[in-house]
Amino acid sequence: MVKILIVEDEPAMLIGLRDNLEFEGYEVDTADKGDTGYRKLISGNYDLVLLDVMLPEMSGFDICRSARKKGIETPIIMLTARGEEMDRVLGLELGADDYITKPFSLRELSARIKTILRRTATGSEKKEENNYVQIGKLSISFEKFDAFDDNGPVKLSHKEFEILEHLLKNKNAVVTRDNLLDAVWGLDYQPTARTVDNFILRLRQKIDSEENQHIITVHGIGYKLVL
Ligand code: CA
Image (cartoon, rainbow, N blue to C red; front, side, top):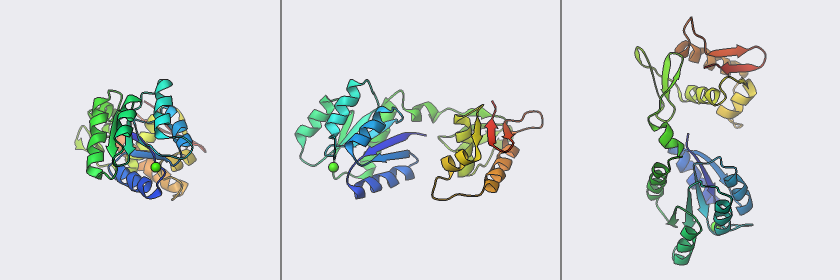
């Protein structure tokens, strides 16, 4: 999944952007201060960053400049205020990929994001766009939420996709039930371990054949996807 970091100190703006981008299927992380935003950006864990200019602790310009100096190439879209023409120019000189002037429409922002991700060879959207992964009997695209086997399309729930994606990220390693719960359900809603087991059971029916088992139970601990 494409991961976007939003660094913005206006709570309403931050929440609005986050909700909309999540709705569009991006994985979103946020920071409301310059220094925390900078630390997250240089972790290199993101495919794209939306970066406000005026921020507490460290300005968007400083973040952009310092990150580029460190060799961080993550695409950056600066969020500038209306009429700050100088800001735009400066932002691009400092290594930002694009800027968008507030107030902007979400549709326009979304189009800019897509353009940059397409342009960036490293954007994972591009990598995953046409990529189907083979897991047991299933061919799966996590980008398109699409799966099929030899008999045709196979229906997987959103949670089943997420569980499988998380297991795949950790393939051949043991994933504890707690880790899976945190990764897929988050902290807001915690199903019981039994729920997880039921999801795994359903996934097994879609993936495993009698001869080949890919989702292995590690008793008392969790699961392992073996490929
Ligand atoms: Ca601001």
